[in-house]
Image 1 (cartoon, rainbow, N blue to C red):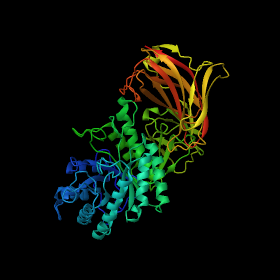
Image 2: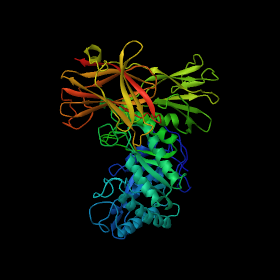
Image 3: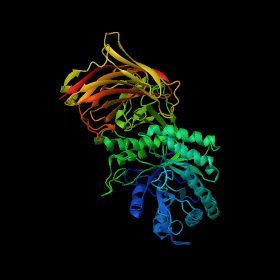
Image 4: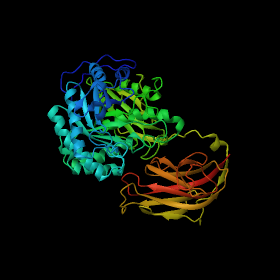
Amino acid sequence: MRSKYSVGVIALSIMTLSSQAVQLPEPGFPQSFGMQLKTHNFNIATLDAVHAAGFTTVRRGFYWNWVETEKGTYDFSRYDTEMAHAKELGLTVLGVFFSSHKSYEDDGLGGIQTEEGRRGFAAFAAALAEHYKDHDVIWEIWNEPNVRTFWRKDGKHNSPEFAEEYTALVKEVMPAILKANPDAIVLAGSVSNYWPPSYEWTESCFKLGILETGIAGWSVHPYGVKTPEEFSIGHKITRDLLKKYGAPDMPMVNTERGFAVKETRDGWSGGSKDRALEFQGWHFVRQFIVDQLNGILFTIWYEWDGDEFGLVERADGSPRPVFHDAMEMMEQLNGFRLKGRLPTDSDLDYVVEFVNDEGTRRLVAWTAPPPKLPPDEYVEHDLFLPILNPSEGAITDSQGKPLAVNKGQVTLTLTGKPIYLTAAADLQIGKGIAGPAKEKPKSPTTSTGEEIPLNLFAEGRPWTFIKNTGDGTFDLMVDGHQVAIGALTFDFTQSKSQRTPYVMAKTDVTIAEGATALQLHARSETAQSLTFRVLDSTGQTHQYKKAMRPTGRWEEITIPLTRRLEHWGGAKDGVIHFPIQSISFSVPQPGDQKTGQVEYRDATLLMP
């Protein structure tokens, strides 16, 4: 394995080169770190910068048509200088066998579909594996072969045909590589996921025998979710498929995932645009830790200097906020390995423990929004950690300042930004208990504008309950204080939905132009991801989502009517065209809980 070294914020000492054959890294820091590089930045300067930042692996595509310059002739000069420098620095290169070749398949569609193409690609991969057999290289077959973007353009994403063609390629490539270099470590998959069709594509490959080809691991690109905590869902589904097809111990790796700071089809988590750089930094840290919690051996961040995903600015290499978050994590967790997640009373609260060889304990704590919600839908609150054997200075913050133990517990304020703590080796910590949500500052609109009651929950108001993929009711009633409320009950015990089932309640309204927001209160005994929809005069639906904590207390919800929300239908422009015609409340199944209730009250319009 690679030797350990001390990580510094600015520069690092050169790693001692290992004389052992390359192998997949053991989980921990920094060996589980990796960085995506591309054609424009796979060079000496960037390799030095990536190494100095503390990353131990770089991912890079190796293009077939660049290497096989003439049919049967291989030229490695476009990679040799950089590969030699990576070896000198002690960096592992995750090399991706990639691209088509006109000498073998000249249809211009991409991917590899013919027997001649598969044989030629296998010979190219074998030549690379043999040429760099003395380098620290982990190989990966193709990039995202389940989507048209990188496979062939005339098919469908995640189709059985793509799975058949990719599996046939892997079956041709693996014997050729292992004959040329029996010690080669080769990954397959590189799946663009997590969404239901990608699991179907994965299972198709497994059914066709891709796991029996000699591959050393299965790689994933978990883009289909908004926040790192949702990786756990997809990682478990993939692990269960590996078990189903006889490979329960097959290593899993995350070979590409980044979080964009601009709206893109994939990689954008939503939320406030003016906080995108802040969210990116949070997600960098949380991604690596969540992957470690799920047994992912290493994680590749996408990417070093792209405009949308970069750790640094492409123009001048200046660091973004995410770079500083990365360096803080490097400093805090260098030399540490995962011990486990400490118990809390909320699945959304994370307190994760790491240890090093000296027995030092580091804790990393944060809270997350419910699944499918954007990053700013976390709920700031205190977490009370019981300390069972308190002693002075037994737990300190990232600056070494002791935390006060009051009434046998330490109080942490959790947001979406991870915080670091150091705990004494013998400190016993009990189950964390979440306190109430802290009130968020109100905008000028909500604090100074006129409020107009909507009377949505008045007796006799017509509401329509929509079963969708579940069952339940929407009932109007009054609570113990004679306040009118609407109660939406849900029952998903009979639902056969392959996705998250949900139910809805709808009422017609007439909301004229001038309203800036719709405000109401809701409460639930379970953690919820509530959805609110308004239908405008063009038939366009505008959707807003809100995380609810399982406190059973009323929480204020403000649905903006003057900014772009998720939208579809009608004008399709993201602009609310007044008058608003209806309001709908949607409640999805909260985790594994099949039945429950959400209550609503006090709906008002806010005017400027």
